[in-house]
Image (tube, helix red, strand yellow):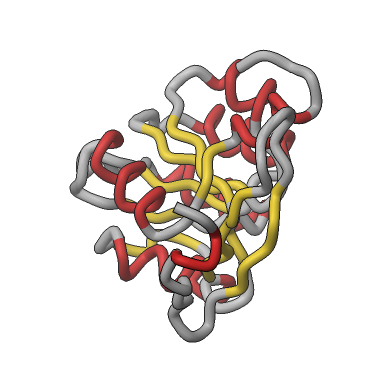
Length: 157
C-alpha cells in the first residue's frame, strides 16, 4: 500500500504530535499528553501534586521496579509506573528528572513518601490496574517507551 492510499490520522483535540527518529527506522509519531489526561485514562487517584496535573506534558512512560533501570534509561517528560512505594522511588525520580510517578496494583505510599514528593514537587498517582495493563493503556493513547531514546542514543535497553 502506498502512502497516498492510507487514511489520514486524526489526532484528538489538545494533543500535540511530534516526530521522533529511531536509528535505522522511519520517523514515528509520538504523542504528548497532559498528566491530567493520563490520570483520567488510567483512573488514577491523585496523591500528591494535583496543582501540576494541567501543566506537565508526558511523552514517554517507563514501567519498572528496579530503580537502577530507572536511573539508566529514563529522562525528562517520562512517567514512572511502579509497584514500589518506598522513598527511594521518589529519590530516583528526582535524580532522573522524571515528571511523575504512578503506583500500580492499588499500592498506596506511606506519609513519608507523600511528604517527600510534595517537598520535591513530584506528582504521585495511584491506579488499581496492574503495571502491564497500565502501560498498555498509555501506549495505546500514544505514549511511547523510553527505548525510542535510549536506542537512538546508542545505548542498549
